Image (tube, rainbow, N blue to C red; front, side):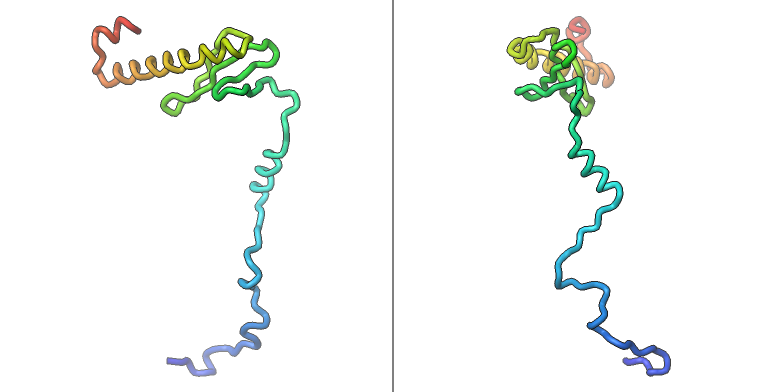
Length: 124
């Protein structure tokens, strides 16, 4: 049911002066935070102390040349020194270090649940 004309104001133009024009595609609006995030991604760190290696989870500390294992266990970021400056040796030590930390985390969670055996207690 239409309203009487005295209660509703008439419009001058319906389609000619629309503020939103959907036919021209989307317009991207960048907020200040988005702009900062983009600029941060473009910046490079020329004097970075850490350097990525050709292998995943292997980081080189530039001043000493020592390699570090960098990985996550149960959501926690773990850094461990591999005590070498040779990439081949660090690459062979990496899986052992990750496995050792995983076992340590499993034992800690088993102890917290109260399901540790005597054998597990001896290994710790």
